[in-house]
Amino acid sequence: MKKFILFITALCCVIGSAEAKGKVEYQGEVDLGYSFGVGKAANERVNIHTIQGIRVGKYFSTGIGAGFDFYYNFDDTSEAIVPVYLNLKGYYPISAKVSPFISCDIGWGVGVTGDIDNDNGLTVAPAIGIVWGVFKAQVGYNMQKVDNIDLGKPSMSSVQVKIGIMF
Image (cartoon, rainbow, N blue to C red; front, side, top):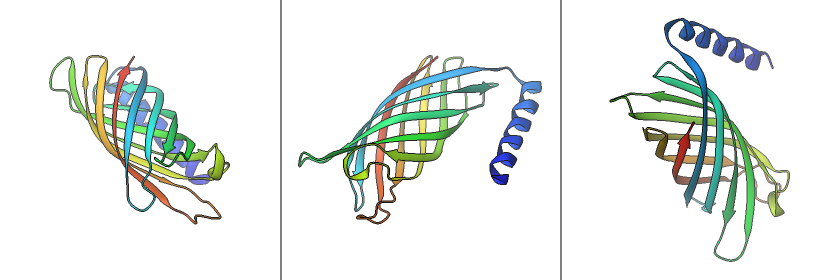
């Protein structure tokens, strides 16, 4: 808990100092994606996520994200995980409307169906992408751990592709 309070305090200091140097404004995002499973627990998945946060100047944004990841196999089994995470993005504007970015999501995913109901674990998703006006596209890697008594602690990793809008 002390680390969490220290992290929030540091984040507020960064935002406060950035506010003096640049404009701070609300930024929302909605993404639709598809993830191609890799590794031992390779499940394909469809993703819908939203991030609600702030844009600090033209180079940085942060926010809280939540989503719905629908995992499926081609043998008629499926599961769903709800990830909740902190999103950090760094932008490199090359024009008024075009900005490549790097992004990282880190948080916790909770299983909500079937064999993984109430199982949960760490989720990490680094990505690179580009923003064109209000539209964005990104490619990244998603690692979702699940603490399951029968399965152990598998890492359900994937390569993900997302498109979305920013408002």
